[in-house]
Image (cartoon, rainbow, N blue to C red; front, side, top):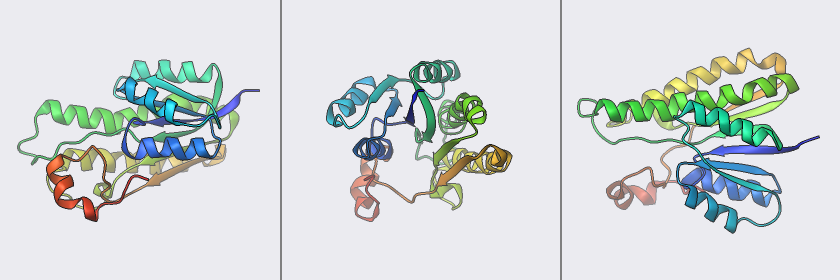
Length: 204
């Protein structure tokens, strides 16, 4: 029987990084993925030997890479929990957002999370067990200016996963949506961090 593992996306910095440390401290095997491989390797070095840490370079917006990564992890472990944490944004008005910016935000935050869910669902349904956690944002339910594409991506994932939860009830699969307020992470520009960081939550 394979050991269980938790897959955390966007694990190189911020909330994802702190989640990796907490799960490791609690002796849970973790697969940590992000685009910056060197940062993932640093997490592996900093974690104790309580459990296994599997760092994998991956872009959630690349569906092929997502399904290949799921296959790689599943060869050795049973993915019983996945945490959709990867995210990007821009802090510009809707009229100033470029199509490239919008594509990156929607493809990463919304489609990327859906790709992750689709990759792990078959085995979770087969096992009739699993947990899907989505790190969303208060922007999904509250108006934040200069965050239209980001808010749309998070609101879209909120609605998608609320429907998903109802569809998965017979399979004993939990779908959990976390909606944090402003958190001091690298997703914010330095100017915003300098001005508002005292009012922000810390990732830990």
